[in-house]
Length: 134
Image (cartoon, rainbow, N blue to C red):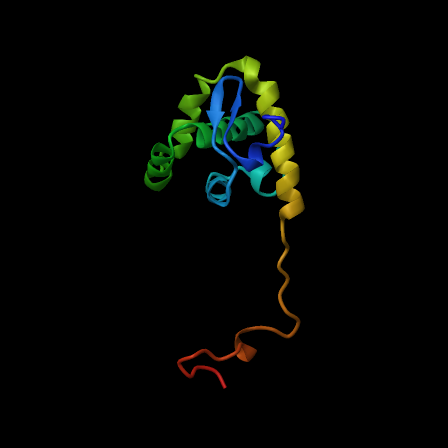
């Protein structure tokens, strides 16, 4: 097993920092934090935005889950991630970027586009168990 290339499968240590696995829950927080590299595979042309997403991802997956959830719930996650960036050693960036590229590709492959059903809408929606609908 290559510890860098199977981050999706479990906890990994990259550059001396222990990362939790990328999960549905962490993807949901990535959505909330606008981390498009991990939700849609979109990489920003703005280097500062790409770095923000990289740092936020590392913070999200390496800090204690309880702390992450508290920061997300009280709206301080962006500030906490930014502060974390000052503790992230530059020499581990290539390894983190390699993993991010892999996760981004896997996320893009797993994405599902939901299209509305032709002729669908509220007017012809099926009824439910309480007698609504026809």
